[in-house]
Amino acid sequence: MFRAIVDNIKGLWSLIVGLSITGRFFFSPVKTVHYPRQVVDPESLASYRGPLELVPADDVGGSKCVSCQMCVRACPGNCLTVIKGKEGKAPETYLYDFTLCCLCAACVESCPTSAIRFSHNVYLTARTREELHMDLLADLKARAAKASQ
Image (cartoon, rainbow, N blue to C red; front, side, top):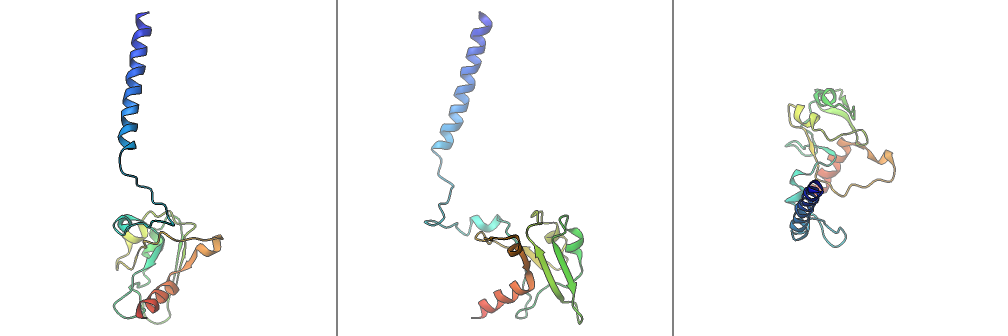
């Protein structure tokens, strides 16, 4: 009999603790963004990891990448393909397969020239997997052309 009363009191205490946590979050500000009517503020995007992008060099349309292959070696998902150019150090091709990327940042941290970074593109959409196979050099040139207009 005494044991049943103690178990009921423990259960009631557990219920009170659970309801207090629920009540605290019930009255806190809402963190959900209803997309068509609201957009995410830039302060919230500072820590967002989107797909990779190349960092532009000082010259127009160029990349900081020197084709050292460190990002390719560091990537556990094998989502990067870098082909060194015929003349100079600039890459001829820089392919990125976002479907294989685990967003671990191993490639970003291993780059000696800080040539790649995560984008803050929260609006990336695709209908097929092939749309997530990206050419980062073409993307860099398109961003440079858009910025020069």
